Length: 552
Ligand code: ACM
Image (tube, rainbow, N blue to C red; front, side):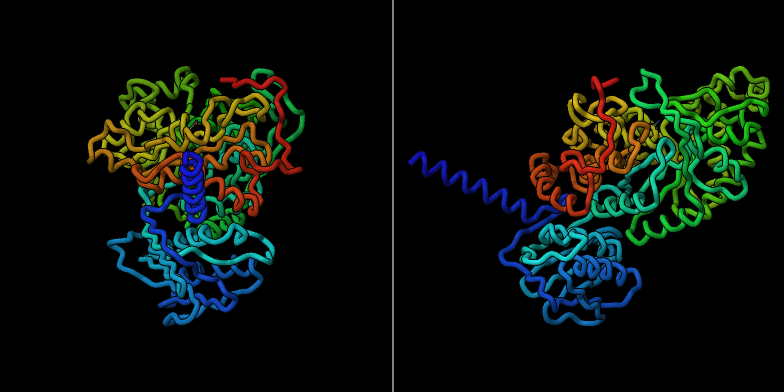
């Protein structure tokens, strides 16, 4: 009898797992009702749009492309009423679903996608693909697959409006093809923002027509730190790279086609050695030779709040805003040492003239001037949480990275905040016991820890909490030399953060997430993603540490 009960329990557990496996959508939808039966994705399936619309047609075409690649048969796209085996795209009023929400109903006869905006339909398609056999993600035709979709009803919309993933291309440069793949994965997990960290001490990575030395000099460094920071060793090899304006346009357009907004980050006044390498007149001393940095860390050579510097930055931002239609422009603002400002007659006089009591207020003066410029162009400025020091600029949104305090302080001052605290959101941390892992910057943030993050702090009132607009994973690439290495660090932790951003708190469950992730890994394999835990592919050239221990 005991054996029988045990057997029944085991069977139930397996069934539960099988169900999770069948409906393994990441991030978890707001509501999913499983139903009996399946929709057979036959070779004569048609995609039907109730009304023609260029964006919606693009979403349908993206679905048709995927079906064609994996099954070998391209479905037709039609406009009008749905009949026969069809996937029907229909519109709904926006009040209920919002701009990003969608309904998805799978019955044996028809799949219906309901959305107020094409973006909702795009997210419905991401969910639909994750209801299909994993082979739908195959880049080449697969035969012998039962292409059926389990019946269900999904009603879904995100918890937060801002769901981002960042990439530092300053420390290491990554080609456009990789950036597009990164955007594909952002979109697959219903994140909507790619924060492109384009400038650093170690490299300026975006062509600016008016200041050619930014890339002629600033995009190249003599050599790069090799191995651990404390060893202070260098590889002796010149390193460089930058994106032309045409390439930037190509990336922005590609992202738009996948409903991803690209936010450019142009760092100031710190992390600016690559600017000073070409244009030392914007720093402490026009005669100073400032090299593009070859070592990691924070440096004392920073921009000075001179009129020429503001003219320069406004010119740069003008070109940047022409390239990036995003509402937000990120201006950095983090880790700016004040040593040179303290020692400068010019800075001290400027402080006196403007009644600024210390160098933090001077930084605030700097940022406020930039804020005024950006706001005057109809955009919004984001800065790292250091921009709170010395007084927050009137229109600033704060990106909270040194814990959650910056986000809390911003929300209390009625400013929007995006939460990216290191313990949960820094994907350059180790993700497991550092022993045997490629060198990382330090820290330890396993996927479960990223998943456990709750972006809205309990300490905020309901009104203040509305200013917490979302969450982002940050990917600093000091130790990530190759695309494969980036993928190894980012996935699957960024998927955990995507679920943090999308799924309501009471719908989250880490065990359930890990089960869905198990299914999802087969999709990532087919997409050729070198995620942590993936079968190591021959191309992955990570630095294996000699005596790995977390360096924190
Ligand atoms: C940062 O990690 N310095 C924003």
